[in-house]
Image (cartoon, rainbow, N blue to C red; front, side, top):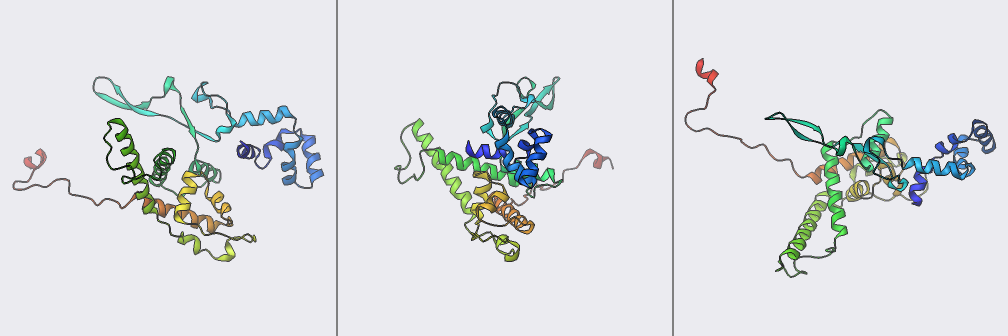
Length: 287
């Protein structure tokens, strides 16, 4: 909750705007700058106004209904419309919203959603394709299932091979199969250092004195899709500067790792072959 409260407070912009106009100007004059005034504004607010800002951060979108409670610790959310093929008439089908009572669905916003929102504010787009994003989310879901299960560190040798039990053996084998899939995906990512980041000139990496740490491809994927860090947050964690070239290099390295995670693209195969008399359309026969 402490980290979430820090996100709600943010840079203090909302807290400063919540103060009356006269108090805002007085606080800016007292602190000497708007940035310092924003950092000090939260402490100047009355308790009721602080609670209002915290509750507003956990407000539920109206389109999702009133069943979900206000939860500031939930974090940022994204509203999506669930759709499905519904019958229209006797033989027709149409893609229609299928939400409960016509409501939309609220889901937790991940790091990609946050980056997409930040890019939209700058009138740009995230340099990741939908296929790359979905593969990263699939990897994160598989990673979380394996970490939450009690089969971590297990193998077929440790469990004695195929279990004799009906249901218990099926569950264990399913978990072991997910573990194998996770290991295979992590091998696709590799443990090499993200080369595009290393090629950034040292003069453009930032001027702070903190020692920088190399960022591997695995850390890029895990940081964004498992830990929920944005590219900027991941670079800050490893003491890298946030220059445009560094962020672009990290994004390019993440995209390349996600492409490897998806595996090689399947080659086009022959769909059909004709031997003997060639098949023809009625229009060709008429000619």
